[in-house]
Image (tube, rainbow, N blue to C red):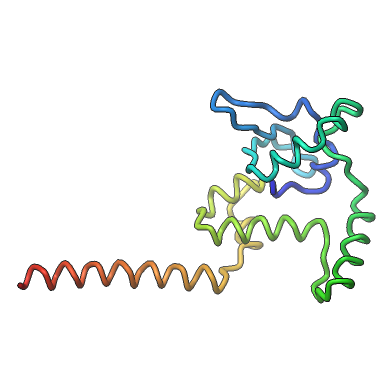
Length: 158
């Protein structure tokens, strides 16, 4: 629910979570891969998970009990096999899913790029496939606008 890389999730400590004046929790960290500072507001789902591991934070200072990337990927492979998912799952797939789902909800590319911690929008564009759902949503939106315009035109003629 954050789009973080595994390397950033592993380093995530309690002191990297900040609450703003509106009560929104933010992840504030220096990315391992790019050494860039990033600030990501947390979705409610991420906050629920964060809250679930309060005792873990108190013991370790880490936000989550994170396995190695290899162990996570092995577990995901087993889950995929047991559930009949044919796609090769990995921790990194969650970044792609976050990217795609965020775009499908209508968030603009520039904002998604910032949430993902990409240096340029070009990097985000590589991952951001325009999905069938997004294409259909845009056409439905345009059709609805056209219908409204047609209704206005018909009312004026009467």
